[in-house]
Length: 173
Ligand code: SF4
Ligand code: SF4
Ligand code: SF4
Image 1 (cartoon, rainbow, N blue to C red):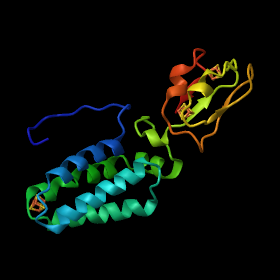
Image 2 (cartoon, rainbow, N blue to C red; image 1 turned 60 degrees about the vertical axis):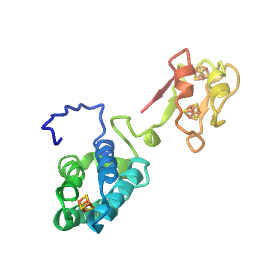
Image 3 (cartoon, rainbow, N blue to C red; image 1 turned 135 degrees about the vertical axis):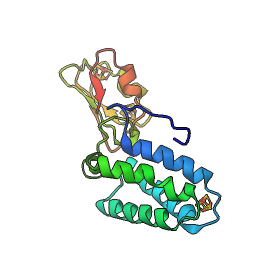
Image 4 (cartoon, rainbow, N blue to C red; image 1 turned 90 degrees about the vertical axis):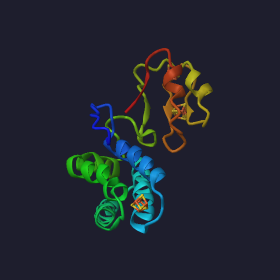
């Protein structure tokens, strides 16, 4: 950004994930001399990690906005004063995507792996059992030649089942 570069993103990019990427960078770059940047940046990053993991709350949004304001006003140098910009900007223009992560536990770009849900289409499933054999979490069950099902509470979102199924019966959203 400092070099005047322009980054083009499309619907396959998640704005919350992008904000997390930039915060990760600025937290790493902070020298730690002043508290607003040192503590504020770390707290913002933790909120973004929480939201992308599907554990965010609506209160987190208000808390992040307050931290952004404090960092902007009280940080000693330009790094801390602008570090929150990716969060401020994405909150301003893409609040609907933040709320989808928080309320619906959904990442429309499919970037936040903790929010992806793998599903088996019973109409396409041949009951070959291959996905159940490959699943490292024991999350798939079903009888031979019968439609299989995924237990979402056990699924660790590894994607092995989708890659294994030769019949295109498994997809994620
Ligand atoms: S705002 Fe500047 S001085 Fe303060 S911790 Fe960040 S990098 Fe250091
Ligand atoms: S690998 Fe595909 S066809 Fe075989 S049981 Fe799993 S979902 Fe069904
Ligand atoms: S994504 Fe991985 S853990 Fe989840 S059901 Fe498929 S193979 Fe099992």
